[in-house]
Length: 315
Image 1 (tube, rainbow, N blue to C red):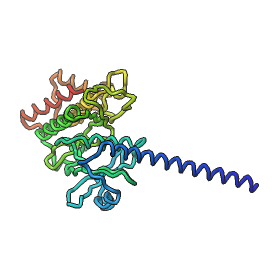
Image 2 (tube, helix red, strand yellow):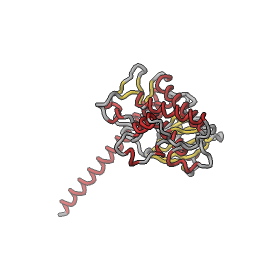
Image 3 (cartoon, rainbow, N blue to C red):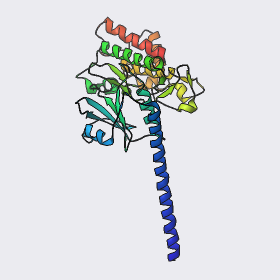
């Protein structure tokens, strides 16, 4: 009996250590992949921080300002007093692909409408250090969340300029970089606003880099990426069409629709069996009013109509 017990215990120990070894090996492979990527690309404009640095700048993660499927965002401060936002990744995929995507894509950018990556950390914990955006994300000022910011409503002129800024940022990603960057997750949550409400595209975890002359991305290579409600149909259904940078344009169109606020004035029962942009198009054809909030003069009305038309063109 004791001999049988010994065999069982020995087998259990062997299985345990094999699992530990496998887990350790996978962890090392992920780390090696990230280090190889960093050596190959060389990030001169961004700083490499240790985990201790990250803890110090966030005061041991004392001030959480956001949370998502990737992890949490904390407010921090650099030694020179400059405020930053620290994105601590807790839910990373595969061999750190989302982390590599974000560092690799955003480190190639330099544009007023793209958030700046100050630095990153990949030892012990993976973290991304961004410039701090005092006005938070666009989703807080539009849609159902707008009630949280009634003390600071966005004028139509501001919304219009934000829409133009996002478009300029996307144009830069698609045509202005040496490497074309497809974001694949354009939505109000990923548009940050600085102190002057200048929009900056953020969150490049789902981004894909490709050569400028490469217009089409294979679905097998990129997989389904994006957020329901903003994701382009061809990204989900390969039979509809090819996935390209135009998939970001579709997401931009849906974002602008939400900025206008049309969706809030629609009875859900009216559109349950009808594609939402089709409802908008038919509404325009019939010359009906959308009853948008904040319209005070003809200039506001003209800007709102331009945004609606552009959103439909993009979709």
